[in-house]
Each structure stands twice: as structure tokens, then as C-alpha cells.
Amino acid sequence: MKAISTALGGLAALILMAGPVIGQTQALRQGFDIRVGAAPAPVRIGGQSRLVYELQLSNFASTALEVSRIEALDAATGGVIAELRGEALDSALGGSRTVPANGFAMAYLEAPVAGVAPDRLRHRLTFAGPDGRPTTVEGGETGIETWPLPVLGPPLRGGPWVAVYQPDMERGHRRVAYAVDGKVRVPGRFAVDWIKVDEAGATGRAGETRLDSNLSFGAEVLAVADGVVAATRDGVPDPADLNGVDRVALEDATGNYVAIDIGDGRYAFYEHLSPGLRVRPGDRVRRGQVIGALGFTGQASGPHLHFHVSDAPEPLPAEGRPYVLEGFRVVGRYPSIHAFGRGERWGPAAEADGEAPSFPAHNVVVWFEDSPTVDR
Image (cartoon, rainbow, N blue to C red; front, side, top):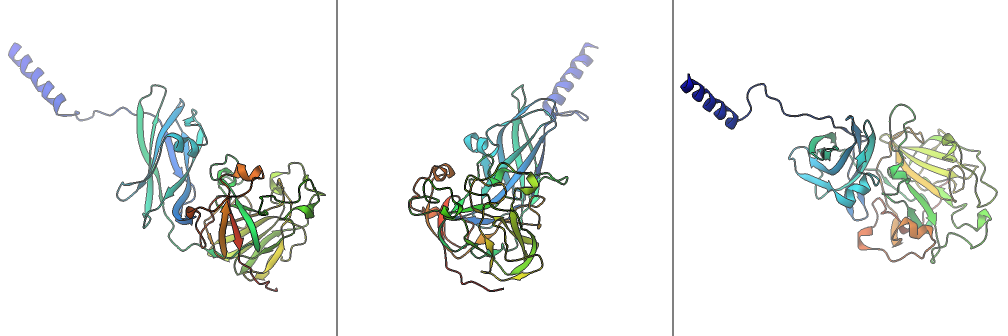
């Protein structure tokens, strides 16, 4: 019996050394559901092609989870396209890597594209719970759109105009999601606020509050492509002066607006226009045609033209889609949106800021080529 027992013990040891027995399971833990909202498309921003999109992270664990790394992978080869950790990860997650139990977080990615973009992406997430034990999970697979982006003309004339946006700004267009009809969307993913400045960086005459003392106010706004006017709002008055108005309801935040169907399911969107639009729904417009005047209506801290392209003629229930502009040249830049807000003088352009056609890099100063007025 002792010999049999010894033999069996040796057999058990061999089984343990060889690997798991049939029916043995690995330890599991609740973690993240990983999803991609709108499928990205390569877009040239400044001098580099990028994929701009978001990961929606839902924590289904009963405890908080801390993200330590996010990797974007070529789904076919497993090669790493982009990796976020440290400060870059903090920025992508809005400053906090910890997602509370049953909580939600959005990770904002801008993955560089070297050469040809992969057909599909998937994502690898490394995280830990209170025990500190790291766990890695993959998910969030998405295709990449490959059809040509809209190539649009200038929405304004002359300059200098500042492309005011900051990708990592907490309440900037890029990081404001809306769920108004049962689905979360980011309509301002590629939105730019265009504001005119002088050579010293001033947006108007110092100390004056008259609307016409502002350099942007009243500028003619142009159709960026041939198309059909899909939707408008008119009749919202400009405020009495540059002191503006109190906060407005969400549905009134756009002020007067125009949405132009430019084809292929894309709509050029203009917001904060002055009352007295030059077009109405159903009108056919041509590139360069005057459609209205830059105003100060809706939720705005000053006169500016909000411009973006989306996949629906609605202000909020629509996804912001990439596009490129032509007919401009970069003449300078601000180091940050905060430098612009302080009224500092803009500096020289950097080589990486790029030229047309491209999506303008954030806070660059551009000059639009003169476009002849097109009559209706």
C-alpha cells in the first residue's frame, strides 16, 4: 500500500508540473466594458496624420479600478499604434485614472498614423483594483473609415484669424459629449472657434464694449462647399454690447445657425451668427457664397464663428466628423489657448503647424485667401 501511495503521489506531482488539469479555471475579475463611439478616420492635423476618437470605459466591478496603461493596436497584427501612460494617460482621461465602481470614463485618443492606417483597431487596457494586482483586457475593436475627407474652402475672408481650440481642455468642444436622444455623441470633435485678432493679439479696441469695436463681429461668413441648406435658426438677437448675456438653455446654445448638406452624409455647421441670415432651408449655395454675418448669439463669451462638420443637420445629436480646409496659410500661433485668452501677442508658426489642405492645428493664426463673393 505504501508503494502504491508513493506512486500516486508522484503521479500527482507530475500532473501539477505538466499544467492545469481538465476543468481547472483561471481566476476572473470584473472589469471594464470597452467601446469606441464613432469610428475614426485619418485626418492631417498640422503636419501629421492622426486618428481622433474616444474610448468609452464602463467599470462593472464593485470596486474602483485604476487604469495604468491604454494601448491602441493594429487588430490584424497586434502591433502597437499608440501607447498612453503617465502624463499622457492622465491627459487622455481628464486628470484621473481611477474609475469608481459602476462608473464611466471617457479616454480621448489622438493616435499618430505613420504610412497607411490599419484596417481595424482594438485596444488593450491595463488596470488594477484595491489589491493592486494588474489585469489586462482587450476590447473596443473598431473599423477605420477610409473614404476621402471633405476638402472645404474658407469659412471667412482675410485675417489674421485664430483657430481657437485645445484638444485637452476639460470643457473644450473636443471633450463635451451629449446624450440627448439615448446615445452619447461628440458633435464638436473637430470644432474650431474662429476669432480675429490684430498683429498685437488684440480682439478689438481696448476698453470699448460696442459690438462693432470687436474685430470679428459682422464679418461675412461663407459657404465652404457647394450644397443645400439643410437647417437654420434665425431671429435670435445679438446682445446690446460685449458684456453678453447670462447662460442660456441647452437648446439655445447655438444661437442663430446654418447647416449645409455638403454631400456624403456630411453637414457643415455654423453657429453664433447674427440675425438676418442670407439663406434658408432648401436653398442651393455655392462655395464662397455669403450665408450670413458673424455674431454673438447663443452661449458665447464673445463674438466668434463656431464651425464644425457632423453627420446630421442637428446641433447636438450628431457626431463630429473630420475634414480638411484649403485656401489658408499659417502665419503664426499661440503656445496655448490660455495665452490667447490673456491677450498675448501671437508668435511665429512652427514647421509642424502645417499648411493647407489640412485640419488646422490648435491655436494657429491663419490668413484666408481672398474669395470672390458669389451671388445667390
